[in-house]
Image (cartoon, rainbow, N blue to C red):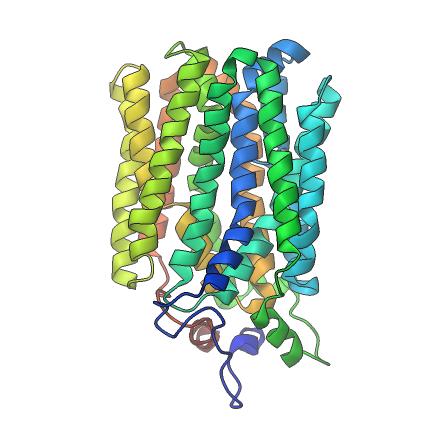
Length: 440
């Protein structure tokens, strides 16, 4: 059966390359690999927020309508462009190797971001946004697979949590720069985008020294002379159940996270809860809180046990749903926005993308791992792309209808995540594969 390709042979188990069996002693090389792979998350979130922070200024300079703003968000790194890159890049990461994809996609990212930074018309802005989205989409599933495959059983949460730290750090840096450069207007936005070009090129250069995933190489060796796993294997048995679960929890969570990340400054300014600078500061506070919560809570407890994971998810789900219920009962002002942001940030660290990243590495066999995450990540971003077309229009109607929908989306993610969470915490990937093969 297809699931058995990750089950260790009698000749011996694949040794975890990153740490001892309990995952407590992590060598510097493991952290370095995770940090460089995690820069995909820095660049992903940074590009999303940089675009969101400059929406009103690009709108004024390039004479864009509200519909054009929605289309820009829908085609970029937060949505359809990213989805396309994830679908294609994820599959190629399984067929050709993780390194081939994450080594070169950042060159496309840098080119697209440069086009955005220098955009003098809508065509340049849209073309650059799509290119950045495709590059991010290709990078995320392959780089995360590399981290997950290099991590020891009780180190996956810590090492993949570091990529989530990077995901929060990117927006913090972008928003602080946007705030500092706000007096420069659109020139300030262009400088922020150029910073992401520089970070992408430095990361590309440093990644050239990384090695291919040992687990992927071992799986290729085992498959020598035999047909590779076909994509349709994802839609049978335990793999199908894993696809449905990860897609559901991430898709519904990402609708809220994507709206918050891309549109908070725009909504705050448009609905007169504060100035553009206030919107940037509030959004920055949210990512900073999320970063701290990831380090102190997620990275500390995510590898403990299945029971601990479910408790974290339950608490996080309640906090996130409550964050958007605030908008239904309290006036929309800066204080309430800050409360929403703080609750959502802490809740997201406990029951959000961090767990999605970890469990996505645990549930799928090596030769389908990148494909699976490309599929689920891409599906979530594609739906978010359609949703992004509606957000500017909903924002003009008022915050309450939008908040009610986001609270509902978060409730779906919380309920499905809690009641159907798989028991994979702290287990070697080979043991998880054997357990899931037995279910087939």
